[in-house]
Image 1 (cartoon, rainbow, N blue to C red):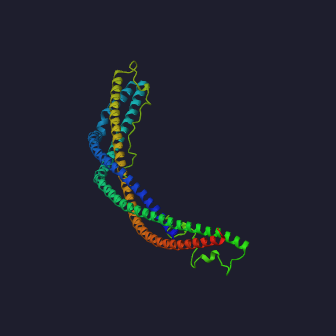
Image 2: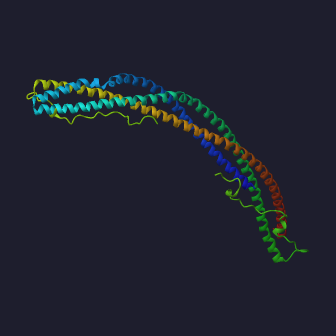
Image 3: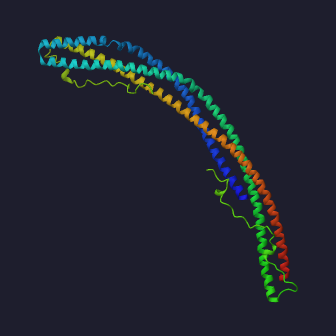
Length: 392
């Protein structure tokens, strides 16, 4: 019985140690969440402020790209005049320069159209992200209160588990004391039995040499000194065999930064040869190049703005994902605490029941110890008598 109670006590000690480890894990997780929550609030405020700066750019770019015909009118007129002048001159080199310039204008016009479309998409994406970001600010600020509540619950359960640790340590100490008591009296009894057996040798030798003693020959076997009902030492059970054993989103991200297509395929052969071209063609060609350069600058600025807007929207999306992840972790910690609350209640009841069993086992051990003490004293008395008979 003592072994069964010891096994149950050890199993509860293991469960309490596991609960202590999980409580430490909750404490570490909530500490990290608390720090991240403060950073997330600051990051959200920063994103809200940066959105205003993006809107300033959009306010300038949107009307600038709204009338693409007006943007391309000057360049188109110049290129048309260049083509007319080249046709009128009849020179192959001037015609070639005019054709190349016309192709460059087509590419520039396509880039302006794409810039306008992507600007509209990015504006919508930023607006959607801003709506989500602004709406979740209150949730991000409320995380601090939720984390504080989980911390308070963790401290409360930690106090209860600590009380169970104290109770199971006290139970283990009592069982150790009981085990010592049983072992001590068992060892003393074993010593008395061994002494009795040794003394019998001398008595038997004397009887064999001198003959039986006068009167009725006494029967002095070990069976004669065992009282009825005295049980042999119990074998320690396997702990596993006992009932108290161990427990076992948004717009497609393709609206990304725009990469201006290079017009580098037009090499030096697209330049006007001033020694062989007419002054009109030279002047129109330079004017067309100027228009194309201005259009390139405009689309490059739009591309840079798209880069910043895309980076902002990606950061806002990451912010939302971080908030969702923190919410999941916090919910997991609540689940861990709820499980620990239930487990510690079961452990409380189990430890109390095992403590009662320890009391019962202690009473039986004391009763058996007293009985063994009587057996030991009787053996010592018989051994002393045998010594007298053996002449020692």
